[in-house]
Image 1 (cartoon, rainbow, N blue to C red):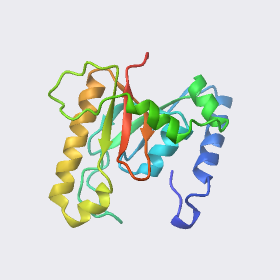
Image 2: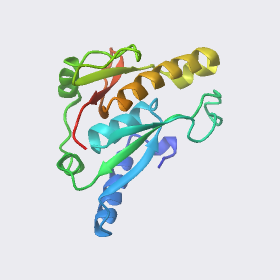
Image 3: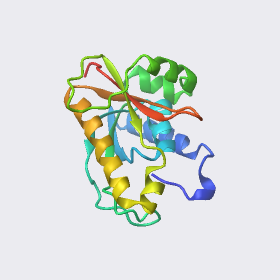
Image 4: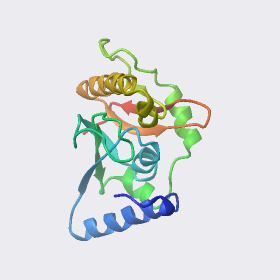
Length: 186
């Protein structure tokens, strides 16, 4: 789902997903999935904080190298979002009862930052830093962009393989953005 630039940041994405949820429920659907680019941070905020989606799978180069407006040649890596419409987390957030970003960031501060995928994850939750402005920077230096993407991919995939789930997106204006990964029941 996407909107032209002049229609972005108007709440249309949220309204479209509310309609999507209503239609899916009427059809008896309990699980909806879609992909999104983990480096598109406004989408991360929508998919996790506002919609209550979770991620258990990371797809490498799902659609071939980036072209179009980014033209970076980076692989089109994607998160596969699981949106479980019968879960309280999703229902609460669809009603507009979203956790404040400040609350999420405070909760996330307790989780260590996962940096080395060779290490055995022993905590119950971790944060993985999102490379800031990766797509824009990769236009200037494609090889550096590919290296940052590979490092991020390796960290996320290591935690997903160890049974973690991406549950939240954490972002504050003057600090790096993170994904929060936790061990949660299936």
